[in-house]
Image (cartoon, rainbow, N blue to C red):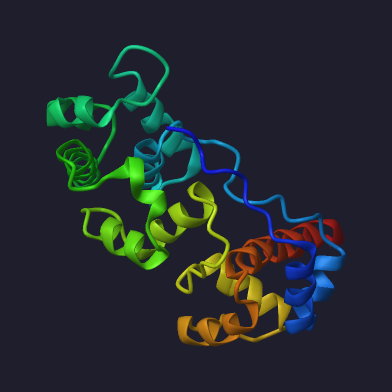
Length: 220
């Protein structure tokens, strides 16, 4: 299943974003350009992207990658198992690959939904953001944040704001020199300035955090 085409805002849209939020605009001026969504392929299908998100939840990157690679090794070839393969696979094989009981059940639920047609991944990109979030969050193990990450980094949607994301909250705290991370409602309110490029602003919030950490390392 091919990736969505790379989606980039126009120069006019970026200028409008910078004008609407001068603090963000100042950061954008001194930062590398937004590379566009979706992100470079880390998954070979929509199903793989969602399954990979489940595997990586609440795990350090190296540990998650090890389990992910063990799941890949459960079927021939280098590609991630297809939904029908995982749907038929015994639970104990997935558990031996390192998946917790909850994650095994979640991946099974995702595979069954994709195989049965309950979740039509081939055509999901035609749906609205809200519809996709509703469809995905009905699947065990996929919450709103995971669905929003899928919208941004897999489907390339430019106007998504995951208000519960701690990285985005921390980015806005640093950008605005706040004493505390803004609550989701506060981030939602600030995000009104970023429409229709809230995904782009969210990406820059991650960069704000990276920039802040790099400066602290240099200053030590």
